[in-house]
Image 1: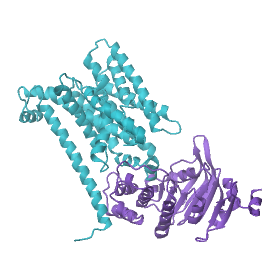
Image 2 (image 1 turned 90 degrees about the vertical axis):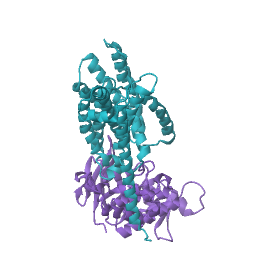
Image 3 (image 1 turned 135 degrees about the vertical axis):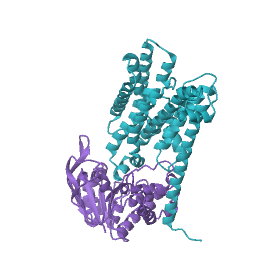
Image 4 (image 1 turned 90 degrees about the horizontal axis):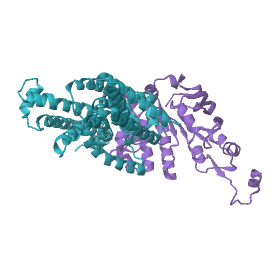
Length: 275
Length: 345
């Protein structure tokens, strides 16, 4: 199991003069799945970028195993901390095996030869993501769900024990969203990879998270167990939305049902909730 | 019959990619050597390959020593070196900015170097290496200017290309103006600075170009792996441990350095930097880095283009006219395609 600790301490970051994160504190539980949710433009992606060295903080720091990631050599950092951006680019015509093998970049240098260990890492990544049979196919011919599995395989070939993912389910239909989240949970269970991801869908977030973080305005509003975080009160505060929370009979996790203004039954408690 | 494990399949597919790459690069190299030998032995007159070899080995062969050693060899050598430079520098920019239109000859770097060379030669009466130094400096200056003008919330590829095209047009008119002011105005010289030419090539020009190629080309080749990672996007590359900003600077300096050094000698040979990378990509695909294949394609284009311009057309044309005629239709094709798909190299 991953024993690496990742934490943000008083982290402020943004673009140019616009500060998006204001003194952010967050400790990622090792070996668990942490999901970050929040309204658009609340700084979710910025947080992920700042926690993976893509963005330099204006104040505070990000600590991996107690050491500032901005003081760690990038290649060394990349062997422990991986990131899958929201829209990575696949070079035209590249095959799955070729793309996945590029995840070995931080383990090699200009003069080192490709080793048995590199091949084994690629094989392990393809097997874990069930993409072995796609190995010789060009990435641009794959479906959205297959492609996302291939990108995850590339991140696995990197053998980073802490993996950050920026909205890994965008552009996927619901069955592929569940497939990707199941796959990430498998990896968390089998390899002990610490997973930190931003998700849009609150119900999927509550379903798959061990640790749920709700952000507003560049700060943590609340974090903890999904049942403690996904409450009517918190949804109202974070998203400005009136909602009801019920319990998913399959997983026992909370489910958020938006109330809205139309097609309401005559339940008194809902009307009270709105007023 | 043994059943192959997935690991064996992965090893096999990686080795196959490696073999394909080596074979194709080897073939390109052979083609460069073949056309090099052809241009040395067949021109206005035919020199037997045996005599060509003897001249190359330094023997004094009556007649052949002059035609081959004095006329053909400097021209062919410069063609190879300039082609390598344009091909390498062009593809480095195209990969770094993930856009085939982002080639140095489209975004004004070649015309910047060319304008500086014309200014140095005609107005300041400079010669040799100092012209190259000024051309490299001007190339870097234009690169910074284009980069600066197009950066707003980060540099967007399309904006950089449009700004580059505008800057390039301005610099072309500067070149035309200086040429029109030249006291001893001659068509050959004008053609060199407008489209590129190998006329009047001398062996002495090859050495500084070779040095520039070793220094700046070495800088680029040292970044081969980082460039490959940049093809996955800046964020993915950074996540793989690439220092994106440092890599960018190294690539800009390296690419501008070789492009400008070559331009100071041959003029901006039209579209070679722009064409080499995409042709190389078509040939080697994703089997390996495009840098060396693109350099070799550049050499083939310049060597072949010059040969066609000299001997296979009714009138003698400078090499830039031939490569320009090849490049312009491709540019139109690419603009149409990029508009439709937003494709990358």
